[in-house]
View (cartoon, rainbow, N blue to C red):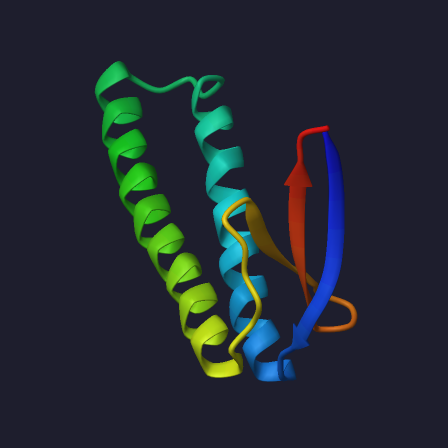
Length: 102
């Protein structure tokens, strides 16, 4: 499988900050889920914490996906069936990454 990446747009600093915070939050929640296995707490506490983390993760992912939908409509980014948008947090550029099976 080959991956192709094409620049399709750019966002403002404020827009980038929003999605970057959501991205970082999601990654942090993933790490919390992993760390939960190693905590010396009761099964009930782990279960409660797990439920809270999963709930927060679902909310964060909803906001993250909403950001991509809102920005794609605002800027009318090109899209494809087998493509995903990615952002370069350093340049604020948006790329369409496509995978083609060859």
